[in-house]
Length: 64
Image 1 (tube, helix red, strand yellow):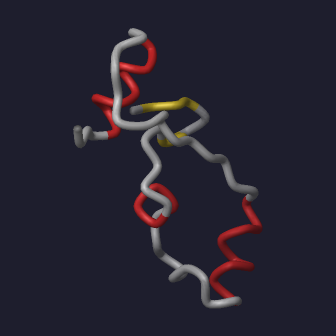
Image 2 (cartoon, rainbow, N blue to C red):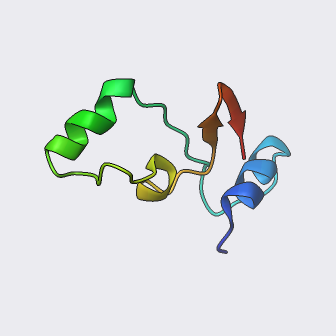
């Protein structure tokens, strides 16, 4: 069963089957700069794409 982040998150809150637990992470503002300097991420790379996150924090609100 392969699901999108939206399907996975909705099923999680509805207590329905899912392929894995939805993933969310919040990074400190200095993290991108340090990881970019160390070569782990590109300066303009999106965290959600890089780590395949399902829940994305935008403007202080969690969105799917």
